[in-house]
Length: 622
Ligand SMILES: Nc1nc2c(ncn2[C@@H]2O[C@H](COP(=O)(O)OP(=O)(O)OP(=O)(O)O)[C@@H](O)[C@H]2O)c(=O)[nH]1
Ligand SMILES: [Mg+2]
Image 1 (cartoon, rainbow, N blue to C red):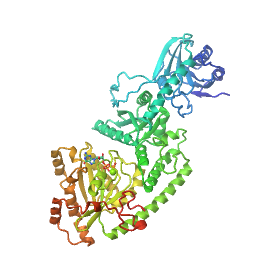
Image 2 (cartoon, rainbow, N blue to C red):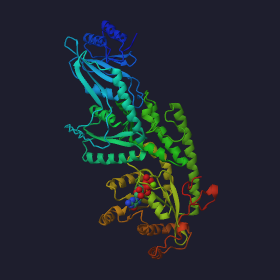
Image 3 (cartoon, helix red, strand yellow):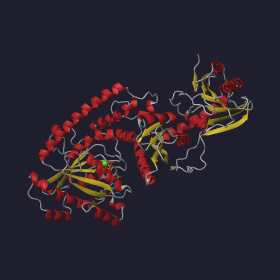
Image 4 (tube, protein in one colour):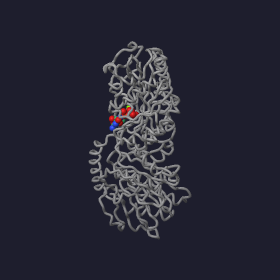
């Protein structure tokens, strides 16, 4: 027996028979629907008082007969693997409308999101006779690159997009029998056009085009400003991850939808927008539960990522040391595991990150059991590495060299500061999370005094939990620090928030007890008066430009002063005279030989303690 789909409860045996008979119809490629099929659908509708539809395959077969209610039809899950780029699903929906309604928004959203060949509605007379036919099909739109922010207040303000080109075209309603378009020729022409376009597109955006979505409750004061700031950061994160941001959408709601987060109407709009802009990914500016992500992916037929996945993806791309790679893989697996439990064939859209990137051997689409095994393996591996680090640290402690760790929000200029202070060439980039592996350099002060300066991973608001756990290890180094340099990008409008976030994370990492110097960086980008104001709030801080070595003198003097007792304790050198140090600062003699300031501590075990190497990477790493 052929299966009936949709709202099949309470159908009489007679109605069931009528419906099942629809499967016998054949539709040639040359027409949208035959008069016989239309008649059969109308009869079944009349008999049941419900909408009835057929999904017709290009082969002419009817693949699905679907029953709705009086006003709508829910399509079955027709295999949510996306149709190949530039191709349609080879299925067209022909269905009845009982009250002479034109194509509804739901019809059009289904057309676009499922990439159906075509959607047609047959308007029936009150007597149940087919009267007119209206149809719609997907058309290529030349997407605008512009980033628009749309805010939906409760009053339903427009989305400010104006007359955007629609990704579909509707025809009719026309009298039945007048709709004599050659369906086969139409679909062939459309597919050719789409294929041509997607070829040029895929070169332009190798990591995919995405729409960024921020949804927040509007009850809270300042919600809009916070949302905009958060979207700005997400846009930067997306850029860092190599995602082409096609558009951003911002919705403030009274209450978040527990299932879809956004309102259904808004989400439908996003689907259409994604089709317009040829975007295949939605990135949510919040964490989604596995079931939310799954529901949204199912509803939109788009790839759905949340903020955590985006950050994980960046880490996956950027981790360099074997340690870092293991940690990222572990975090990705831990994030993926609860999502593997879902009975969901759209798994690849929930897991793989942007391009399915995962370090190590994990393909991110492995089974649950394999994933668990891999987690245990990685955890054991990381424990071993952590023990090794611990040993190295102890050895170093015996050497008595004080350690200074540079911490702070991502992109604050930590690596730049390390480079400038030590003459190193650690990668510093205008990207979030440029640094993922801890690097250390030795900085020499006069009189044979020296410190080891360590660069760290940048902090970020709402650092993903699993990632936090995994990266805690990289802060083990910092846990032994005698002093922290908290670098702040003084020119960032969200500066105060960044300070707050960093301090909260320092607390969580148990580092808050370590003495700290706040370094307001990027002084060249702020007015001098602003710099002075900053110092009023933080009298112990310094203001400098990490890009300009001249400006770091005050910091070096402060470092020398703060580390004085530590050096004395280590009894490495005779008593340090602050006055003398300042005198030396005056003539720039703080660096005792430029070449030596570039010395790197070599791996003590493998190549002998204190070996001089010009390589930066791999410092302290066995
Ligand atoms: N104008 C200006 N730009 C700076 C200054 N210091 C750093 N930058 C720039 O800020 C960007 C980030 O610098 P990084 O040193 O990579 O920052 P980071 O804190 O190490 O960042 P992550 O490793 O990503 O957490 C780079 O483009 C630097 O060139 C400064 O004093 N002035
Ligand atoms: Mg860095």
